[in-house]
Image (cartoon, rainbow, N blue to C red; front, side, top):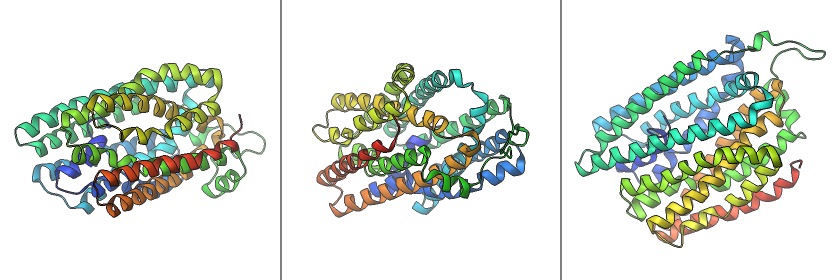
Length: 388
């Protein structure tokens, strides 16, 4: 789903004739809509009495969100608001299922194997994304040579939707050892997940509050530039879909290769130290895009970036289990996702304003990439709030 579909939505916007800022917005603005929609997750789970059932319903809806994208690719035209609407359904369904998935998996995966499980899961997931992305790039290159690039996008989005339906069937096959309505009660424990307001108040002075403050601030800085790497390569550098695929696939492949090693590293040094190392390493990465437009150089940059982001993503996955209790996890992840979406959209919009202000040329992209690194650096002092 991600390799065939999600990663190519900004490129699809460019293929439809929309500008670089519009392409960046299609990758970010829908996150805010998704974050708002996922606020219904705690009530939805409580109504169904099952995290698994809610997740399956959300992933089914997510697979259907590719249908309008397929139609617009065949039609050869779509308005920006239409793309934003379809992408909002995609992200909304995905984000609505995420809190319930975290709570569900927290009861399914034993603590003793949790670090190695998520490391291996990350490795397999990144390999799958890499394969999908590489195939997608080859399909688009084939379509571009024959003047049928939009038809190629239609094929990719169809494959993405089918892939999500397959994963939905596999999720259905997984068990749910402790549904919310059946969890045992202990003294002072109602046996129910805590509500959003209760968790939000508790997070202010808790480790989970320190975690999300750091992640929100850091992602704001990262998203100042991240949505504009695709238009930078396809528009400013004039890369073919083949070259674009090679550069981006390098990151996914690096994540897949490094995930098992990072899992062992996390077991040795601890999750809080891993997130610290990862954020420091990621801070200057945007600057590495500026010295050269050489394809081989950018592939190396993406390999480094993939390894650093793999460490960050693994640490974030583990932090939600280490810094939060089972009772608060669903609501805490929901709150985190809302703040993450706000930070993502705010960062992308600010980066887009800078890009438009400087005229969308090389100097404009340079300003965005430099600004992103400065903002990431400004977030690092928040590391001091995390326990070591």
